[in-house]
Structure formats: structure tokens, C-alpha cells
Amino acid sequence: MTLTPLRVRSVGLSPLRREETPLRRHYSEVLGQNYIITESGAVEFADGVRYSSKELGHIKGISKEEMRTIHGLKKAFKGFIAGRNKLSKHSKQNKHSKQE
Figure 1 (tube, rainbow, N blue to C red):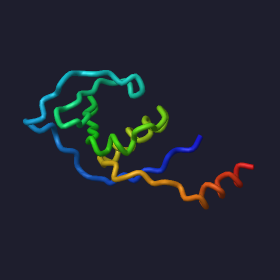
Figure 2: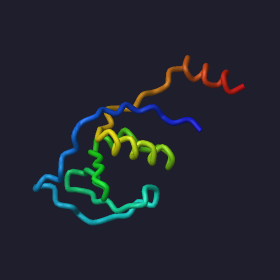
Figure 3: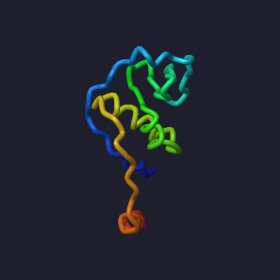
């Protein structure tokens, strides 16, 4: 399986702001924990990992395994997802030729 390359920057996570009141609690079967969605569209998990609405756009459509990996990295490095890299046509060809 190939993981989609993502850029993660290490920064401190900010706590919930007072103006961001949780709408309701949800449960992620993939990550095995509760999370809340704030009024601004941010998602904060029980373990303290927080995804902004922009970050959620970067990880939309990834696999369950990729989500677990990204969440673990985000938690370990206290970072944020800066963007999603796309593999170039050249790197895709090299990857396929190595597998043969």
C-alpha cells in the first residue's frame, strides 16, 4: 500500500477557544476515540489532536490506514497539515517500475 505524501509542520496546538463551543460529541471508529466539531468547523479529538477545517480539506478521501498514520504523526509532532503533495508523473513511473 502506498501512503499519500503530506507535509506536516511542527507547532504547538492551541486549546479550544472560548468562542468555539462544541456542537456535539462524535465517535471515530477509525481512531477509536471521541471528538467534537466546533462552530468554526475544527475537529478536536479526546487525545488533544485538533484538525482545522483547512486541514480536513487536505486529508479528505484518504484511507483508514493513512488517517491512523497521519493522526499519530500529528499527535507525536504536535504539528499541522500544511498541504497535500501530489506525486509527479515521473515519480509514479519509478514507483511502478520498482514494484515489477
